[in-house]
Figure 1: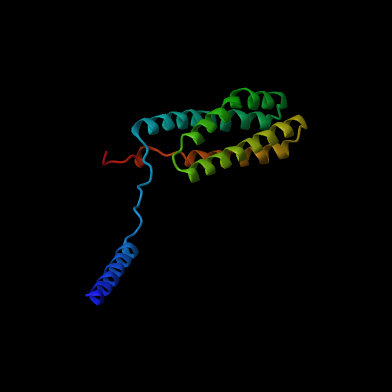
Figure 2: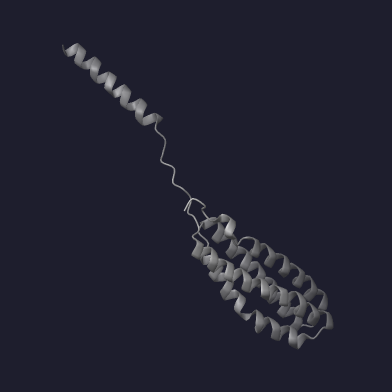
Length: 156
């Protein structure tokens, strides 16, 4: 009888090992954006797109005219609020990778804007034009990170 008991215990141990070993970890669904979150992010995107359009037309013209006082005023005036808006967008992204990428892009935009400001202070048109082009490229990349309504969970 003790022999069967040992065999039965061994069999149960083997079954337990197989069951535990074959079961996989539970897969957690990635976080989903709600309609309200998408609406909020879309509002930020619209605001940032308007600033980008204005920057493309006005700041570009000021740099081309080498109107350094107004270049600096534009950077500190109308562009003064984009740091806050870009930060809000970054904070409202759900995935940590998205947040990290958005913060990095925002930093790059500001590095270029500060370089334009410095170039304007030094009246260096070549540097200002170069940094302006780079800032627009970084800004476009940032806008590309903002999710739109296509990421909404259609099942809910």
